[in-house]
Length: 98
Image (cartoon, rainbow, N blue to C red; front, side, top):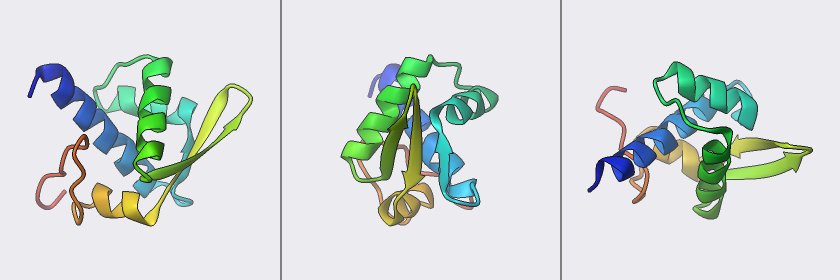
């Protein structure tokens, strides 16, 4: 696996974990962008939107576009991936105890 693929997988896991930690299991792309930066992933807003699209295609999240912002909501399947109960290719598996 290339380093670029490793980063993508980790970024997708971080997005799922961000949503898992939200009281409503949802957030908007702007907040997710800021949270990714906080967790060491300084990527563009467009890359965040690309990840959200990919996660939606895998049925890990549901999205709704409001203006220029995407609102993402974690699915039950996405929660299982975020907590390591299910492994999905393209998303890093969380560490034990994480």
